[in-house]
Length: 281
Ligand SMILES: NC(=O)c1ccc[n+]([C@@H]2O[C@H](COP(=O)([O-])OP(=O)(O)OC[C@H]3O[C@@H](n4cnc5c(N)ncnc54)[C@H](OP(=O)(O)O)[C@@H]3O)[C@@H](O)[C@H]2O)c1
Image 1: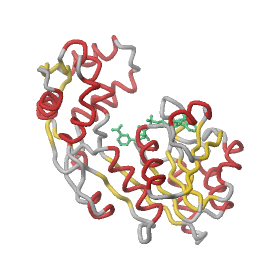
Image 2: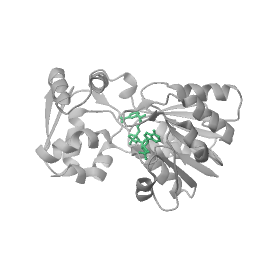
Image 3: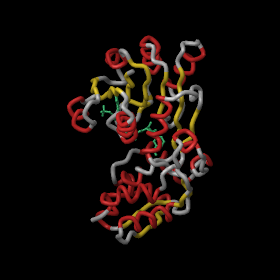
Image 4: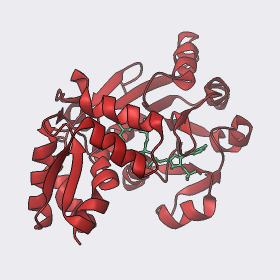
């Protein structure tokens, strides 16, 4: 039984691969860059070349696959998979039985095609994973300024987030891909608590053992600062909405991680301890 993991070199996919390998499964990893993937993925993982934007390049990747973890985007700008229906045709043709989808910003062509395929009784089961904010976003957005200046600069310091450890997203994906009873479900995935941005900074400061200041920017200051980093207007707008107007689902703790994996969701304190070195000068 071969399980295909797409996005296998990314934040979540890399951990899905680890979970499946540790549980003794045969894993195939899709990548646009096989030589890099072979360097970063564990021994024994079969690396196959393919581009999700070009379904013709994916025929070999799906051959003999019984379960697959799918991302919904192609390229570094996270553009939704416009040819999702062709990918689902390959999934059905290959006889894949179980699919997990790492949900993106909105229901896109891939999700719509999967829903249509299951309605046609193809024997395919799929499960949508909808994580809230990843804990690893702090690595992406904060590590540089904490390392260099001991400061986090962000707007909306009191906004709450039930941020989730990416290893828990991966653990849920692995459990769904290898277990019964998850087909047709949508799993919202959160961590065990909702924290404000100020609280996150405090947790991070404790874990790293270095002083970290929080400077709250106004929305306008944040827009100007993000623009100065070369960030596009669309991303800036997305961030202002996501941070300034976090939907209820983003700060409401749910027990799904524990229900699906049998283990409590990991805390931000645990994540911060694991990644402390990345924030120290
Ligand atoms: N960050 C958050 O807080 C958050 C919250 C909820 C949901 N999400 C969703 O999570 C997803 C991002 O997950 P992530 O952070 O794990 O991703 P990521 O770390 O940015 O990883 C990107 C992965 O996608 C693969 N990839 C990109 N374009 C590809 C293509 N054309 N063909 C094949 N593979 C391609 C890359 O593989 P190669 O480079 O090896 O080809 C890489 O493994 C997005 O859909 C986002 O909306 C994020």
